[in-house]
Image (cartoon, rainbow, N blue to C red; front, side):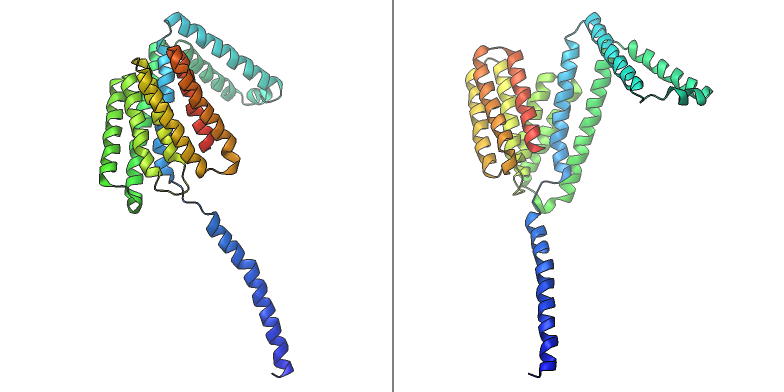
Length: 298
C-alpha cells in the first residue's frame, strides 16, 4: 500500500478505537445499571395502606383519652410549638420589622393566624377523630386510583386474572372496613391486601417488596391471632416471616445487609414477646418491624 494512503488509514483506526472505548462502555453500563423495579403506581398502593394503618393507630390513641386528657396533650403540644417559634424568631428567622412595614397587611395576617389558632385550641377530641377519618377516606380513594392506573398501564406484566381478582376483593373488603370504622377488620383486610400485592411485586426481578409485603402480612396477622389468644398460630406466622427474610437476603444490595439484620431481629423479638401475653408490648414490636421494613425499602 502506498505510504501516503497508509498514514490516514492508521489515523482512522486510532480515532475509531478511541470513540469505541469512550462510547460503548457507558452505553453498556447504563443498560446494566437499569433495574427492573415496580412502577410508582404499584408502590403507592402498598405505601397508602401503611399510611392508613398509621392514621388508624393515631385515631386509636386519641380515642383512648378522656376529653380532659386530650385537651391537656393539645396544650402541651401548643406550648412546644410556641417555644419552637420563639426560638426561630430570636435566631433571626422572624423578621418583625417586615410585618410593621406592611402596615395593615401584617396586622391582618396576624389576626387571621390568631383566629385559626383559637379555632384549633377549642377543637374537641371527637372533632379531631372525625377529621382524621376524613383523611383516611381520602387516602383510600388515592389507593384505588393508583391500583386502577397500575392495572391499566402494566397489562403486559399482569399476573393471572385470579390474582388480580383476589387483590380487588381484599381491597374492597379493606374499603368496607374503613367505611365501617372497624379497627380490627381494617388491620385484617389491609394485611390481606399486602399479601395479595406480593405476587405483583415478584414480577419485577430487582424488587424485594414482594417478600417484604409477605413479612408485613405475617406480622399483622400474628398480632391479630395473639389478640384472640392463638399464640401457636401467631408463632407460626412469624416463623414464616423469617423464611421470607432469607429470600430477601439473596437479592439484597450490600449496603442494606445491616438493615435486613435489624428486621430479622425485630421479628425474633416479636416472636419472643408472644409469651408475655401483653398486647401493648406486641404492638410496639409490630411497629418496629414495620419501621424496619420502611428503612430497608428506602
